[in-house]
Amino acid sequence: MLSALHFLTHIGISWIAANLVPGSRKDRCLIVLAGLVLDLDGIGILWSQDAYVALHRAVGHCLLFGLLVVASAMVLADSPWKTGLLAAISFHLHLVLDVLGTGGPPIRYLWPFTDWGFAYRDHWVLSSWQNGVVMAATLLGVIWIAWRKGRTPRQILVGRAGR
View: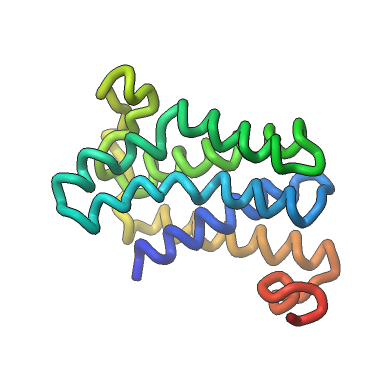
């Protein structure tokens, strides 16, 4: 349950980043995806705990993957430079949340060149009050942006026409 809430925080923070400046729906989606796609490196859990530890926070959380994500967003975007910058911000906000808010394996940002990783010794546990504050602040940020744009939460989730 708590990891699902943490993932929702990643979505919310990425959505906030995507709405920092005006842009197309497609560009906003690319920016949100840039903040989420990192966790695909957790797929190793389907094979084994060893595969998970070897892959997670290395493959998807590294600089090379981040550059690939940003370049892909720029190629697909209506406004490439703006979208690329916000995709990079979204990607790195995910890293900050992981380092501060979950602990776990170190982020191997320079993988595959080195297995060195960074972690925050005083990270918060997933069920900490600090993570609760970040989750609540993210929710309030999403609601505030939606309200400023004149949209209801339902419209945010299912689109303007309610499709």
